[in-house]
Structure formats: structure tokens, C-alpha cells
Image (cartoon, rainbow, N blue to C red; front, side, top):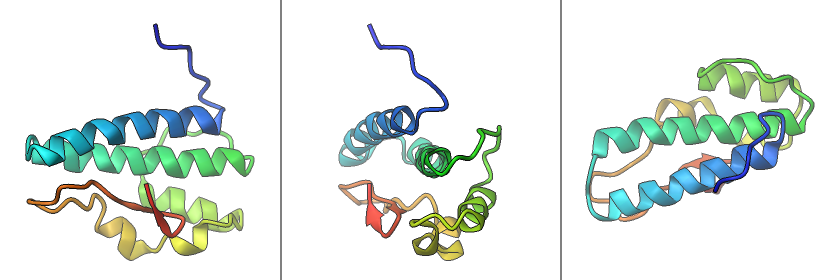
Length: 111
């Protein structure tokens, strides 16, 4: 049985995002549900951004606006904010039609 998560715990946001990303990798390898994968990648990126914001002391808000979350990171001078560029967000989700791996940029790295 899955444990109860805490929406104010950055680790819980990242655990959920990692689990969802693993599932998307399987779908991408099998070239299944491309459109669903694209939308889910945006949700995973949102979870990563929220985890970093919460780590920086942000109080959780209900929003799905990736650009707003990035700007909020920047105002908090978060370490990772400088490596998340608007061009990254406008291309999110990034998933090639024949791509066998699902990747997106957070903090200059790939999840």
C-alpha cells in the first residue's frame, strides 16, 4: 500500500515525479500514447519546479503555469532558476516521436 504523501515535502513531489517518469519511459519505448506522454511530461516538470520552490520556503499554490513557477524560483534566487530558461518551458514537454528515452531539463540536468 502506498504511503501517504505530504504536499509540503519536496521529496514527496520528486518521488511522485520519478515514478510517473518511469511509466512514461515505458510508454515512449513502446511508442504508445504520444499525446498523453506530452501532457504528463508537463505535469512532471511542474512537480519538479514545485519541489524546488517548497525547498526554498514557498507556500504551495494551486497553479499549473510553468512560466509562473519559473519566475517564482527566480524571485527566490533559487540555485536552479538560472538554468531553467523560457525556451525550455515553451518546448516542454520534449518528446521525440521515435525517441526511446523521455527527458526534460530541470536545473541544467535531465530527469
